[in-house]
Image (cartoon, rainbow, N blue to C red; front, side, top):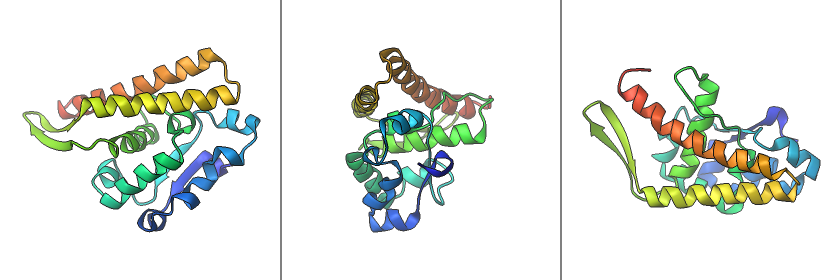
Length: 180
């Protein structure tokens, strides 16, 4: 079982492109159905040394690693601890969402930080983002069905993924407009 349900990917693993070793602590084949059930929405992913989203999505080695990670481990929507964020969210909750969004953004080719009248904004290909989110939701639902999670919980998880993504963009708007 994952120690304290925190999964850390090291800089050495990223630089070496060592996806296999990085995935071992959360490889669904390593767990019983009961253990997988307990890990549903319970894992915190951290990239060693990353202090924010830019440390992952602006780093070519990390982007490449995340793309390879998704091929090998497409179940982020099943495992990762997610909660929509707000101005009252803890640092840990904001970091959880930032890491999840980093995984998503590494699959978006046209991603740019742009200056706006109220600060810095993020622009991306909305269609690519939508397709990747749909795949994450489907993979999470597929694994949930395997471990016999009730369809209502799968539906709630899908809604949670959507709410979390929306809250990320809303949170950026709030902080750029000085309300955070």
